[in-house]
Length: 248
Ligand SMILES: *[C@@H]1O[C@H](CO)[C@@H](O)[C@H](O)[C@H]1NC(C)=O
Image (cartoon, rainbow, N blue to C red):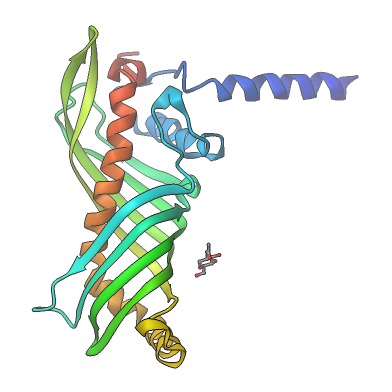
């Protein structure tokens, strides 16, 4: 009997939590702890499905229509243009915010999120051209680019915009930096499918992944910043700022 009652209470509290997107309990302006929990809830498993309430596209895996990672040849030992089309990014649902700054009453002040992601994998069709540490690289096929234990800092500012009598935060100037503990690459069908060359190149890339990430990191950050700008902008365009944050 007690077991059943407990189960019902658990179900109820779960369904109440699941309603959160329609009816979020606001945090106090600038209350980092509360905001951290609120946003972590957003990113947790129950929102990995498409969520019209918060204007979130399906987050995990997230469709990445096109991402170009372009690193100039001139001043770097790595000069590549890597184009990813119709890729899927896995891992957003397992990212956790560990620190929050900003989100005060003045929307124009800088907002900052520190996030830890266990694992990101970007998987799908690629095409690459260029050179990596002197070796030429070229190919078109399927790739899997992964990063483990990624420390992320996202900062942005914003402007208040009025819509239907309510005030929304319009997110601007979003910058994201990522520091993965390690990264791994796999490109199928390199060099027109020359298996020996391709296998060697994949081994070479992974043996030198740290040096390669050091060179390509800023270009990757830039591409991810654009991706995250879309996500963060959509959330704040859907939910009035006063519904997320309040005086009390
Ligand atoms: C991508 O590679 C990682 C290992 O680096 C692996 O864990 C993951 O399953 C791969 N994903 C796909 C879809 O192949």
